[in-house]
Image (cartoon, rainbow, N blue to C red; front, side, top):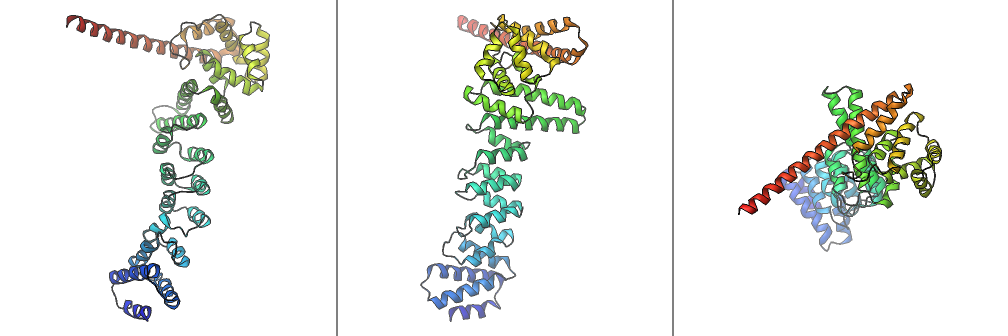
Length: 392
């Protein structure tokens, strides 16, 4: 009887009045002691209200049923597929939307819908994977910011692959203490590609020059990252570099000339498929033939071998002893010695290698000058403070 009177009354009611009455009917369905016949009638009325032309009415249903376990499933599913302003509370909270339902909604590709799902509490691993695979950039950022979401490393890597060039996503990930080093390196690579595209679009540099500058910056940043990588994680970083095509002879030579011997050993062990202890012995053994065989097995170019040979020889002679700057920058003395020895061979096939070594020499000299000037400034500040203390 009550439902019949309700249906007669709403025919002439305004949208606001219909919305208020619909909300009351939905609350009565959930919380009042209605008879089975009245419950069935109320459900039928609410199904009919799904066709109400006013979104205010349908939103009233969504607000009441958003967190309700006892809501009519057919009503909840219909509301979830409604326009976003109506569906929003259902998408955000409804326990009646199963995992398969939410995956289907993610697949529609509507960014607003994806964002609401990404922000749901206790978001499951499959839903996080679906968002990482097809979600919009905003949805993926919301997912990363959702502390209740269960996200695997594979899904994080997929987000990096798709949106690592976007600063908000990159900054969110880099701020994480538990982010693996390979993933951090992927973000560095994305950043260098973004910068190269930016300067090329502004016509500040030509495409080739911009690409080289970005690659060089990425190599430097990768060496700095490797220097901070725990030894047990370094192998994973090297495997990532190889899989992504970044473990080149140029990068390994940069690491060697920077004194990052551990990274060089891991790289050669990975490329040559040789145990790390054997690689270590080849590098530090005075017999050159062993390192030559290792170099060939690693598949590195013959044209670059003279630089590796001279760098290994300088390393064995202790040229790195007393060098400053750790393993994150090129060592000027070592670079200049390798350049001098290679230039003395006067081989036409070494033109590219010599050009690379000259760029390394310039970079090393500039880094050394910066360190020298920083030390001078630090000494000057220290002396000024001592003079002030003495005067006091």
